[in-house]
Structure formats: C-alpha cells, structure tokens
Length: 169
Image (cartoon, rainbow, N blue to C red):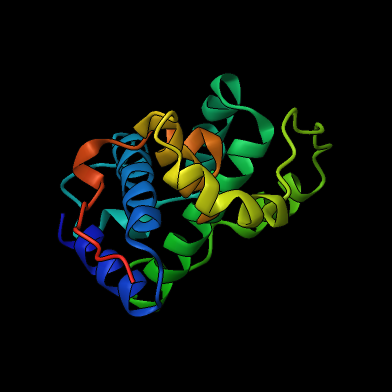
C-alpha cells in the first residue's frame, strides 16, 4: 500500500540497495498482513493500535519456522520499519525495544560456511571468465561478493534482477 511505498522511497533515499529494499518490503508486507489481521480494520489508523503483544505473537510464530539468526535479521527489518512509522506519526510509541534486547541475547550457532572475501576477490576474474562454470554458480558468486546472505540469494526472483549489458574495458 501507500505506506510501504513511502517506506521504499525513504530507504532508497537512505542509499539502501534495491535488492535489500525488495527483501525488506516482502517481509514488511507479511508483517503488516499478520499484525493488521488482529486489529479492527475500521479504525482510522490501524498502525497506531499495534502493541508489543501483536509483535511478540508474530515473532513467536516466526521462531517456529525460522532459525534464530534469520529471525534476528527480520527483527532488524521491522525495527527500521517501526522507526519509519514513528517518524511519520503512524505509531505513538516504539514497540520494538523489547525484541531488540531479547534477540541480542541469543546464542548463535556457528555457520557451516565461512566466506573469506579476500579469497573471493583474488578469484573473481578467474571465476567470471571461466567458460566451464555455469551461469547460476557465477550469479551466486556475484551475490556473495555483494554481501547477500545465502538464504536471501536462494529467495531472489528473476523479476528482482536487472540485467544490463556491460562493455569490457
């Protein structure tokens, strides 16, 4: 809706990458749909009726299906969104501090994959010019080079990718 469009423009002005914004918007729409389902749609400003209880219920459901690290990233998205709502006057109080503190205390599991970006930089040209490497691994390599997490890479849709012709220098 209009509010998500305003958020998108604000994030673009802040310099956020288009792919990051797309991922954020997708999650914010899920958040809005879930939270607003519990709020009377006839009220003038439904966002002003969001409580910590609504948010807590939402994140408890998320914890059932997502890893703790992923939930923490999603909380960061909703925190940005909550700050935006507060700046625009849609909410009267910040409903996120409780969740920020709670999830900072989580024990993180060690990732199965460690990426050394220095090694990637050294191999970049070799990987991209190697004709025996298929396009998909090259695309994943590029996304990793730009700092996207594997979980987010696996959720990218072609409609989110802008393909341009690039001249060799």
